[in-house]
Length: 101
Image (cartoon, rainbow, N blue to C red; front, side, top):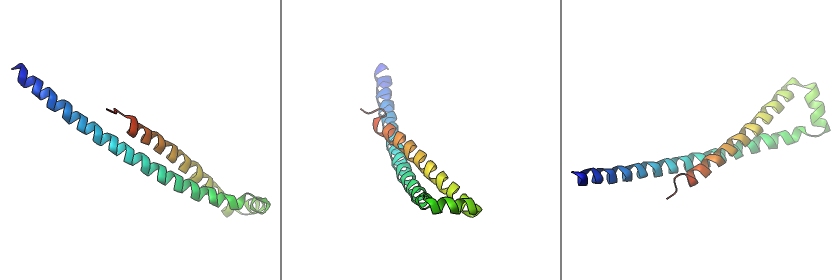
């Protein structure tokens, strides 16, 4: 009887290890996806903000509510993309380091 329970324990540990490896692969994939999306969104927002940085950009912001809304949207994209990329980096590191055997 002890032999059967030991065999079950061995099978159960191997099955759990397989699940952990799949979770690591999933975390790694999600992390890389978040990094890519975050960097793209950040770059779009940041590059759009560059056109409003000079004197003419400041003047157009003070005169137009539409330009102010566009600048606020671009700032949100830059910050949101940066946060998504940082979260993606953390999830990627977790996926690489979690239960490494």
